[in-house]
Amino acid sequence: MAEIIEPERFDLIVSGTGLPEAFIAGAAAKAGKIVLHVDHSSTYGSHWSSLNIEELTQWVTRHQQRDEQRQGSAGQEARPDGEPYTISSRAAAPVYSHVQLSQCGDIGSSRDYNIDLVPKAAHCAGSLVQALLEFGAHNYVEFQAVQSNFMWREGRLLPVPASPADIFAAEGLSLHERRALTRFLALARAATEGQSPQKDAFDARPFSQLLVEQGLSCQVRQLMYAAALLDTDQEPQTANAQPVSATASGSCTAANQSGTAGAGQTAGPVATAAEGLAALQLHVRSSNRFGPGTGAFLMPCYGTAELPQAFCRVAAVAGGPLLVGGGP
Image (cartoon, rainbow, N blue to C red; front, top):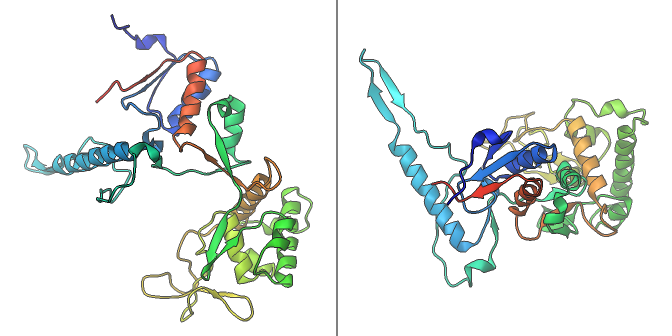
């Protein structure tokens, strides 16, 4: 006879096993709360799932069916007073767009693949890794260190530096650029510690403006955007300029083509100097954290779904039952 679960027995009921839901369940269980964790799916992860080819095919089919149901359930009706109103679908709002299947040849066994719906690399010194350590969830997930990250520029890959050794080993940088970059990173480190007389320079001004004021060339500025994981379209657009490139003087120019931002504007969100400083320091702290020669990022060996799975296990070990596959 199946056991009847009485909701009043629990302090918290969490629906879904995505990373946010799994984190909440794990945190509540570690705090001594009685947690019931449920998910209608038979797999961990929700939108953070890692799927093989067969599972991905089924997921795409379900997603397309939901789109059809969502489109068919909306329409115009009329109230008794004659005023129109809209019937909206109760289906969840779409998270993904342009979901479709394409036929391909023989690619081997479905289980040879692990496809992340949300690919995720974690900073070695970031909040996610810190939470894994504090919760003990790191015991349930295996990581692979990403040794280097690169930026694609002018037809080649350039390594993104994170230390003085990286800077002087980097190819394609002049001696002047190496010295300017070393000086800037030292300034950023001192500003973080509150020791720099220019610590107030890392304020609400655009990060790109600060980099120009510090004398960094176009190529070095692009490396800093890559290190901070910022959109590379941080440079202001100028009228009648050529596409982004390094000029003889080392400055950046940005195109003002049809459909792009106008003069003095950028094509994407602009980071402030304070935001850029925080992102750069995270990159520097993350590099070599787990040994010499290791990069700034960790990747789950068996897919992003291992992250919520680890926090789900934390909740389960603390006594919170987990029910999966119990819904439509």
